[in-house]
Length: 261
Ligand code: SAH
Image (cartoon, rainbow, N blue to C red; front, side):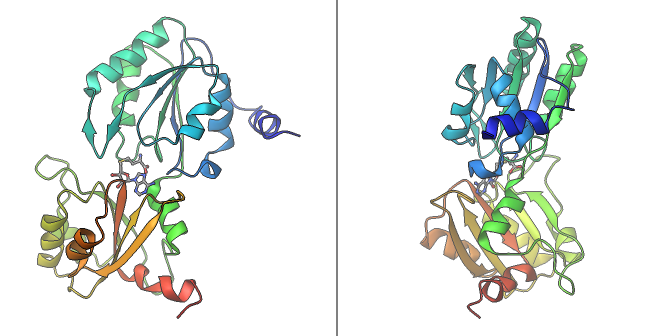
């Protein structure tokens, strides 16, 4: 049985992508192997694919039959205003297209999928959210760092480092006081301030930390540091977007999990 037959068979009980509907789908962090079967099936059904920069070209190619709309956004910076993306989704649905809105990772993790869903609801357009593997989970797995570990952490915090001044800005000192590890998305631009705020919240400079760049892709790099040396390490290694910052005791398990400790 071909993979597409398997995807069709295993998703047979799910709603079909109908004309005039929009599915907000997650493509995972990059490795096409992390695409879900449901998203794979949707990519084969769609005739209008609206996608971002963080989605791998191999994944886009699965929707060979679809018209493609690139609405590139990266690192939180919009090259197309969100309102225009919402309007495009509404227009395509009203034209009777079978729309897939594909984003990197999971569609409602720091990806404005919620705003798109609200715009669709306002316009009476049926939609579904198809989850994807968020880069924190894909990236920690490929970097060999556990998400939770008995005796180390009973929670994990996913945070955005991009919202330096807006209302979405996490209260880093409060997060630091939880003592729980953080995975910070879009954290490179404001890393120095974020680190200073985490330190102010009481996290010691020797707290293990890592950067995971291009997680799950062939060019993945993992840079291990401490909270105190993180900014310096990022500059030295020229770590670039997309990258995750991981802070906390789970990072220290990496060596042991790789069997090299
Ligand atoms: N919806 C996405 C996140 C979008 S915000 C998700 O669920 O993963 C964009 C940020 O995600 C990037 O700045 C980076 O911090 C992170 N990211 C996405 N893909 C990544 C990858 N392959 N490697 C490392 N970080 C990634």
